[in-house]
Image (tube, rainbow, N blue to C red; front, top):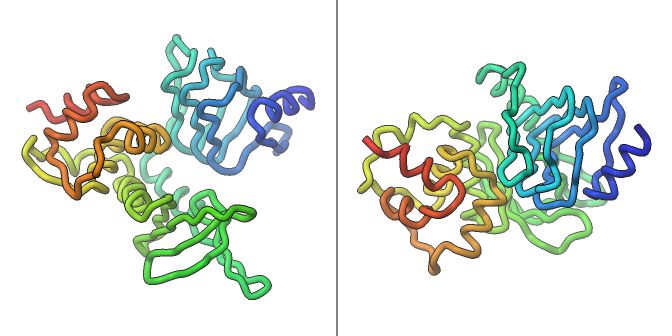
Length: 245
């Protein structure tokens, strides 16, 4: 197991621990675009596991356990992935409420917060909006909450709010079922709707917004506009078909 752990660390820069005799990672594990070629057998990931565009991954390990979402788009996996047990939506919501409770810490006249799989220093705070930064980093991030234990980070306030809406929706597509092609939604709601309906990950959505979505970004979009803009993107066909009556 030691050699397997060392190989994993070299390929990903991530250190695993042993828990109950098995490899374990407590939070969400983002490996998108890394050169990883295999995951350890019996691996447990407490949060989500993002393997998007990891072309070296051709199969999942035996007895893999993932507490959140599993992203496999762009991997080398061609066979069917079987899920042996799926938690109910109530169980997932209960786990999310407990695991995502914020932890505040005061030290040396500075305030810190651990939430949304991230430990950051608080630079300022107004209402439900925080300005924070990771330790040993000068990049400022936004952290937002709905005061109902949903939290989200983003490099911009729009990005953070879009991710927050996505988390509040909890992949419930029913809120979009009665929308027409001419209905208008905000920029943040459009991002949340696309991720909720298609299952697109945050990283892939962010790449589209930064590199292919025409600028300047509009405050509002119609459903028809979103369909046209994402026609050739991951999940574009699924998004379009969702609104076909």
